[in-house]
Image 1 (cartoon, rainbow, N blue to C red):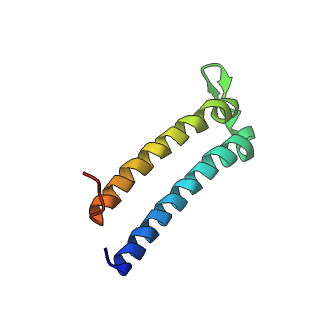
Image 2: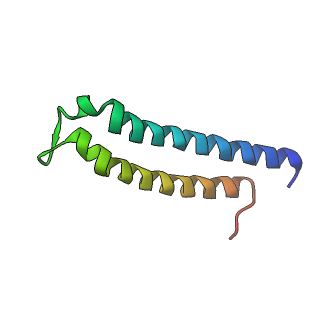
Length: 85
């Protein structure tokens, strides 16, 4: 792999990680702390949504982010021809 391709691959990887970290920050800090009062106005199965989100919702989103990262990295690996299969 040429140096320019390595840089492009690394930049695409870093861009993906930063985007997913931004989503994680908004979901965990934003929804769990900053917007908790607004979310508490909504009931979800008898629980306030702000409480539920801080305890459960952010975990589900985190697991989804892991799956998205793996899927996107597989695509990126194939695009730059560094896949393992």
